[in-house]
Amino acid sequence: MAILEIVIAPDPVLKTVCEPVIEVNDEVRTLMTDMLETMYKAPGIGLAACQVGVTKRVIVVDVSDDKEENQPFCMADPEVLWESDEWSAYQEGCLSLPEQYADVERPAAVKVRYLDKAGKKVELDADGLLATCIQHEIDHLDGILFVDHISKLKRGMIMKKLKKIVAAKAAD
Image (cartoon, rainbow, N blue to C red):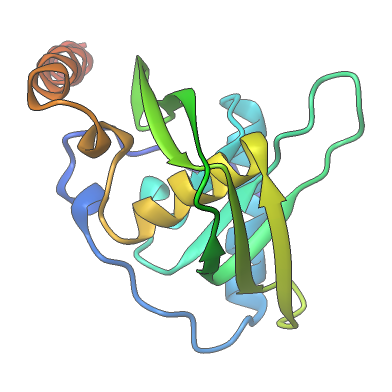
């Protein structure tokens, strides 16, 4: 198990459309385990493979709170099969856009199909924060960031702040 380095925007890997996973093998399982460990340490509730520099369609999600046992989902090739007509807004953040937040509206519920850590095809009905988190992470696999869902003005302000953060880190 390893803690992976999280890629910070505006790194171009975050705008990459990720490649399908042909099969869930030991390499993919190790990636999932390392991504979970990285996400928990950050701390975060979701992480896509491109956020650690790997352009495969793999995400991990865990929206359990500190008072309950971890309930992670490891998903290869996740796809949304259905989304509700009802929408909800959450203030979203992202490990690749540190300390930046914005209200984003998304379908309130989704049905998603994916390959689990064992390579088994699974369908999951999700709503609330879990649905939002899954949609956020799937967006990453398509090169879409949460700021792509907000106004151009707000997005510009956030990206300007991130460029300063990246420049300050590079100067250290």
